[in-house]
Image (cartoon, rainbow, N blue to C red; front, side):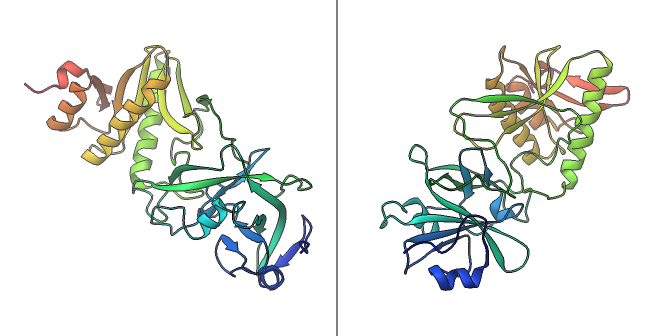
Length: 308
């Protein structure tokens, strides 16, 4: 059967399924009557968080409920096995306002890296730890033009990429968080604290910068709150001195430090001095703690934080 649409065509979703089969809802719609799997991307929507054109591939986020881990089953399995499952073609559509969809063309999974695991926000609960998701890498078939009217995203890299970011761009929400969501209260606290501390350091003539790190074969750029190049210190900020937030900043310092050479000293920026047990945690792991004080910022080196 010749596919009845050409790239650029718009059709109602109900009419599409009457023509080629498949289920009328969901992001992934395998047909039982034609050799096609229809895929539906919604630019800007939470279930299309990682969708976008890289210049060579279209990244397509797997399907699954917004509060659960994704898995290679059901629609995701049909997509992952499309070439082995009677050679079905992937037909990519972009949703548009109303009941219609816009046909972007025919695709296949990349033969080198067909999909990668990544992190997805829990929809509606921005403070909750991210869940595991899948992003499929779709390569256009011959005759499929580059898609239009969709987000562009960074391609998958086989090497770690470190980029400098503009200090004036908001520190929160972070890369990889749900598109368009507002900052939480704790993120607002951290935002103001980071801006104040970076201004404090620059007023003293320090070379302060922000970076993102995208590890090899990862899709999400990981944020580095601050690097003070004058003192060779990496800074991670938490909007609260509660244990959950301190431990998150602790993990960020352990994770991000390895990507910089020479290896920077670790600094945790908090809204106040942490209680003794958490101060001890920082001190025993060679982390300096900084917090606002009457005259600017106070600072406790690791030796001063360790309890006897």
